[in-house]
Image (tube, rainbow, N blue to C red; front, top):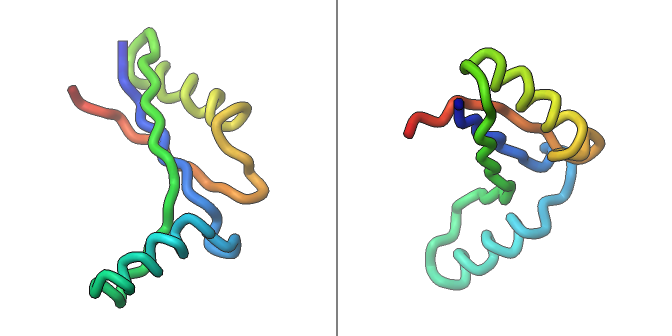
Length: 80
Protein backbone atom coordinates (compact mmCIF):
# COMPACT_ATOMS: atom_id res chain seq x y z
CA UNK A 1 0.00 0.00 0.00
CA UNK A 2 1.36 3.41 -0.98
CA UNK A 3 -0.04 6.86 -0.27
CA UNK A 4 0.04 9.28 -3.18
CA UNK A 5 -0.74 12.98 -2.82
CA UNK A 6 -2.43 14.78 -5.68
CA UNK A 7 -2.06 18.57 -5.63
CA UNK A 8 -4.61 20.23 -7.94
CA UNK A 9 -4.15 23.93 -8.73
CA UNK A 10 -5.89 26.37 -11.04
CA UNK A 11 -3.94 27.18 -14.19
CA UNK A 12 -2.00 30.46 -14.02
CA UNK A 13 -4.16 32.00 -16.76
CA UNK A 14 -7.41 31.24 -14.87
CA UNK A 15 -8.75 33.80 -12.41
CA UNK A 16 -8.51 32.23 -8.95
CA UNK A 17 -11.47 33.82 -7.18
CA UNK A 18 -10.82 31.98 -3.90
CA UNK A 19 -7.18 33.05 -3.93
CA UNK A 20 -8.20 36.63 -4.68
CA UNK A 21 -10.66 36.62 -1.75
CA UNK A 22 -7.95 35.37 0.63
CA UNK A 23 -5.52 38.04 -0.67
CA UNK A 24 -8.09 40.77 -0.02
CA UNK A 25 -8.81 39.48 3.48
CA UNK A 26 -5.10 39.39 4.27
CA UNK A 27 -4.63 42.92 2.94
CA UNK A 28 -7.50 44.21 5.10
CA UNK A 29 -5.92 42.50 8.11
CA UNK A 30 -2.56 44.18 7.55
CA UNK A 31 -0.82 41.29 5.80
CA UNK A 32 -0.84 42.64 2.25
CA UNK A 33 1.78 41.93 -0.39
CA UNK A 34 1.01 38.21 -0.44
CA UNK A 35 -0.04 36.34 -3.58
CA UNK A 36 -2.43 33.47 -2.84
CA UNK A 37 -3.60 30.60 -5.03
CA UNK A 38 -6.12 28.14 -3.63
CA UNK A 39 -6.15 24.53 -4.76
CA UNK A 40 -6.84 21.15 -3.24
CA UNK A 41 -4.74 18.29 -1.91
CA UNK A 42 -6.08 14.76 -2.22
CA UNK A 43 -4.50 11.66 -0.64
CA UNK A 44 -4.99 8.33 -2.35
CA UNK A 45 -4.09 5.09 -0.57
CA UNK A 46 -3.39 2.72 -3.43
CA UNK A 47 -2.65 -0.99 -3.24
CA UNK A 48 0.66 -2.15 -4.68
CA UNK A 49 4.21 -0.87 -4.69
CA UNK A 50 5.08 2.81 -5.10
CA UNK A 51 5.55 2.69 -8.90
CA UNK A 52 2.24 0.89 -9.43
CA UNK A 53 0.47 3.27 -7.06
CA UNK A 54 1.90 6.29 -8.87
CA UNK A 55 0.68 4.94 -12.23
CA UNK A 56 -2.81 4.31 -10.87
CA UNK A 57 -2.89 7.73 -9.19
CA UNK A 58 -2.00 9.38 -12.51
CA UNK A 59 -4.83 7.51 -14.24
CA UNK A 60 -7.26 8.56 -11.51
CA UNK A 61 -6.12 12.19 -11.58
CA UNK A 62 -6.36 12.32 -15.37
CA UNK A 63 -9.85 10.85 -15.47
CA UNK A 64 -11.55 12.16 -12.32
CA UNK A 65 -9.65 14.53 -10.02
CA UNK A 66 -8.91 17.52 -12.23
CA UNK A 67 -10.33 19.48 -15.13
CA UNK A 68 -7.48 19.82 -17.65
CA UNK A 69 -8.98 22.96 -19.15
CA UNK A 70 -8.66 24.99 -15.95
CA UNK A 71 -6.43 22.97 -13.58
CA UNK A 72 -3.04 21.28 -13.40
CA UNK A 73 -1.92 18.62 -10.95
CA UNK A 74 1.24 17.14 -9.50
CA UNK A 75 1.73 13.80 -7.78
CA UNK A 76 3.95 13.05 -4.81
CA UNK A 77 4.58 10.11 -2.55
CA UNK A 78 3.35 10.80 0.98
CA UNK A 79 5.51 9.28 3.71
CA UNK A 80 3.59 8.33 6.84
